[in-house]
Image 1 (cartoon, rainbow, N blue to C red):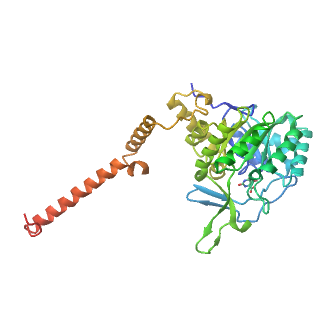
Image 2 (image 1 turned 90 degrees about the horizontal axis):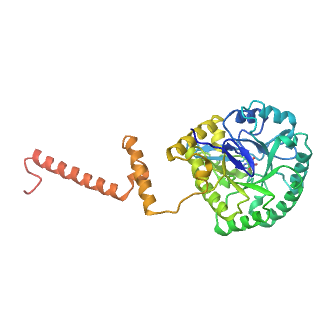
Image 3 (image 1 turned 30 degrees about the horizontal axis):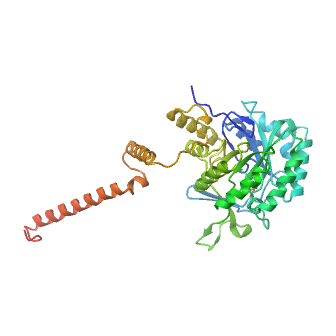
Length: 390
Ligand code: RRO
């Protein structure tokens, strides 16, 4: 029997723990219906503002290093909250789904607290309310010009959470909070302490949003590549996976059990999903890979995760969720043996790590010395012993 990818996010059941991040390819019903047709475990709409807006001027995105790092200064282009909660939109998004139970979720990113409260009130009164399973409050958008990232201002974050949780208490909706990446130990703890005050109201956190204030420069034009906000943009893609892993791990350790952690950031393979779940994520969202590869990425990532689980004898997400082991000499030996096996199955090309390992460097040095010695002996023989004194 194939392993099960089923999970729950803040109490919402998902048949697959891999689903789309709010952001790329999530702004229209047409794009979301393609997500729905894939193996994505849920359908999450683009962060909304009260009114439709076009976002920042073009060019506002850039992909570097074969999409290892992507940059955006989209500036919240979206169709406005009324569009994302309209019965017609939800019907168009979800009609083509094989899985009737697939949850539809919205994201809000108001310019002010009042905007967020207004959007929540519209969602709560929407005729389609029963079809919306969760609201993800984005406290981490790096691209609103002149507005710093909310969740870096802990005082503001706390007062927003107070208002939002009380506005949502009489609705059936689950509340998720999209967080920015944190980098310093005390910041993780400060954020977690505030979030823990709202256990019972906050169902999950999604960690991480893009790394704000990244900059791509073109050396020919000697100018930023992105036109808006002086070129400053959010960094995403495989480069941020390591920051996402650390954020998920630190938050999972610091948050109360009642708050789930959804891992986001650099997920492009089943292995990436597996690692985030090991760190404690209950599910993973895919943003940049969905942007560059399209919705078929969900089928591929799910299949890779199933194969990985099968190879390890894991039948369910619970078998490894949060079970990251401590470093040990034994573990390092297992990792080294696995890397060697992988290298030899790839025709001995080896990985960078293997090539730079101490024992292999020594072997290379001895080989180089032997080749050098042979070359000298050969040259001496060819010159009838003119080179060497013996
Ligand atoms: O639209 C954006 O510019 C954007 C948003 Br709302 C976000 O949350 N994260 C990001 O990198 N870009």
